[in-house]
Each structure stands twice: as structure tokens, then as C-alpha cells.
Length: 137
Image (cartoon, rainbow, N blue to C red; front, side, top):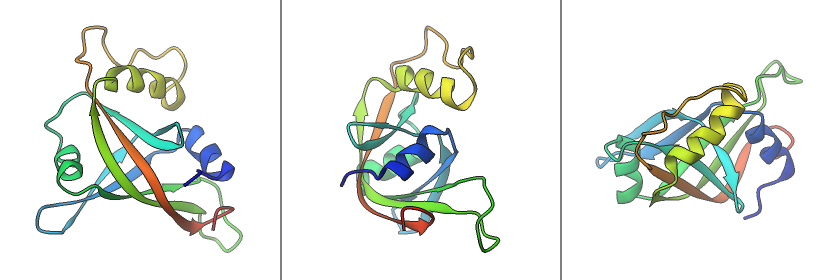
């Protein structure tokens, strides 16, 4: 699915995303993550393979993300987007992606990831459905 321009613009603002993965017993696990877009997929970087979200994705690729706009909405509720998709974890590139996202989330001159950091992992989410409340619903 192509990511709509309004959703891409929200992601490029550097709003914190909430990633929902599924635990082995089916309970949701929620983590705040930085996200970007590459090749019409949503991406996030990770330095360690021992993160619960990565184990959950490797076992069950179904995920959901929510991102709030940070702006007041017409009915008093802040507009937000919910993205459902299937994720996969790829080895390598996590440190570079986190450096790129740090410029968006923290500022252009922030050195967030040390030069000697492990290469890490990238989670790539293929978007299947978009909902929420905003220009994309």
C-alpha cells in the first residue's frame, strides 16, 4: 500500500510512534519508537537484538502503530493515525537509521549513536491498512 502524503508528512515531523506487537500469549506489547519512511515502508532502528519487540515481530509479524499529531482537532480530540501492517526485522543498518532519525527527533547537530555502536537492526513495516482520525481516514 502506498503511504498517503498526509501520513508521510506526519511521520516526517518526528512524532513519537507507539508500536504494538503481540506477546507469545497474545497480549499486546507497546513501545514508543522513532520512525521514518523508506521505499513506502515504515522503518525504525534498533541497536540490540534482545529487544522484546524484535522477538515478537520475528514470531508474529502483525503490528500496529499509532501516531498523534500534537495539534488540537475540530472536536476537541487530537487527530491521530493508526497503521496496521506486517513487519520484518533485517540485520544491519540500525545505527545509521537511528543517526538519521535523531536529526529529525532531536535536532540536526545531535550525536545520538556513538561511532563504535553495533550496526544493529532495522524493522520494516509494510503498510496494509490506515485509520484513525485525520486527513487520512
